Amino acid sequence: MGVYGIEGAGMAWFARVLVDAILLFWMAGRLRPETTDFIGRMAWFSGVGLLILSVPLLPISSFVNRVFLLFMLPAFPLVAWLCIPIPEKGRFNE
Image (tube, rainbow, N blue to C red; front, top):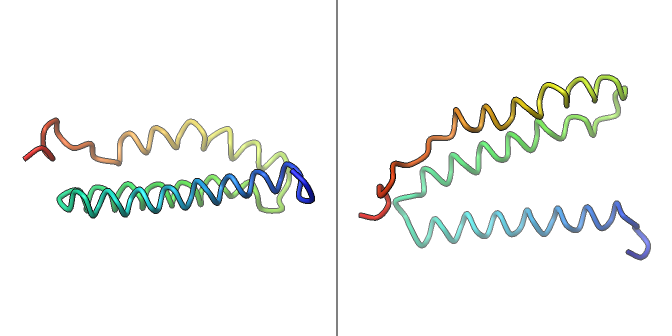
């Protein structure tokens, strides 16, 4: 892990995953143009969710961070489940 330690490894992993996600969304849109709207919504929700879940990284009290995460971690999958429309089975197989 060298100079940057575990934090550097975490940042490198995050950057790699981010680049992978962007490339995969882009390739999926090119291969299946009819899914572009769905992929755009999914990417938008993922970005907003990432921003919301990064709030505890701000320099605020530990108690506020814990309360925020206590409410947001269970709420995030629920909102994603209810807000991201799942295509009907076979819809993209036309």
